[in-house]
Image (cartoon, rainbow, N blue to C red; front, side, top):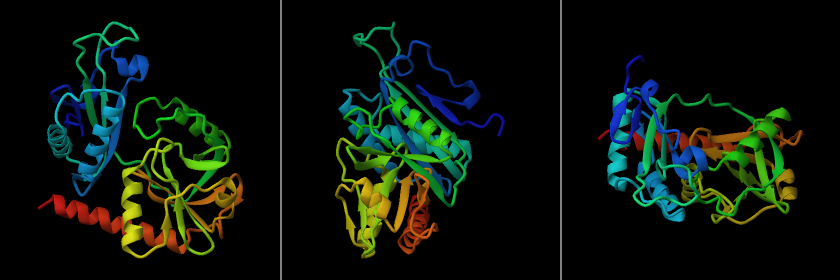
Amino acid sequence: MAGTIEAYVNDRFLPLSEARISVEDRGMQFGDGIYEVLLIHGGYPIFLAEHMERLERSARGIRLSLPMSRAGIGEMIRALVARSNRATGIVYLQVTRGVQPRSHRVAEGTVPTLVAYTRDLPAHLPVESCVTLPDDRWLHCDLKTTCLLPNVLAKEAAAQAGADEAIFHRDGVVTEGASTNVFIVDDHGQIHTHPTGPWILAGITRQVVVRIAQERGFALSETPFDLDQLSAASEVFLTSTTAHVRPVNRIDGRLVGSGRPGPVTQRLMEAYAEVIDSEASVMSR
């Protein structure tokens, strides 16, 4: 892929190897920015409108003016995917407050930095093991900001424990994963996931899976559940743009159910695959 256009930096399409930002960018110095990760499927960015809506919400939440309209960013992403010649992969999009001499106060006239690039989709694992950790993040987890150090440390703690993901809890109430949303299925076949609000980032895949479950007649409750319910669940699965719908077979060293993907999880995995195929088909018309 040498020479393929795989990046965009402030009005320029260019090879990823040539993409650069200033060392004084506030995103690097303060984590002062927001981001989105989009799935490329069938050569198209999937759920683009939903991602742009969340990007705008995150921007409002940190009082950041986007450097172009939602429609303009969407057109840029579509053009970037087309130029990258990828059938599958991801688009990483980041907007920071911009470049200025280092100061906590934002200098008047600072222009936001917009960066996007494409990458291969990470390998999809059929099962995943998790550990539970206290959720010590800030109280605006619903904003998709670049301040991800607690998530990074949680991922490292999970890896050191021989697991793939960390599941956060606040005072025993399960919130979400370090980079995923968490669903459980109880003994009655009802699906539970933490409601939207400041304690979780409402993932686009989560949103789609909730809609699929409701449309296909699954019993689903968006209400808090605790560690005891997580431990007793017959099925646990995670959702994210890169993970899609991923079954969990072990938590804190204990098997979940039979230790294999359960029937609800399997049906939702299949249904989600159908939906993203359909979404790519619509975008190709």
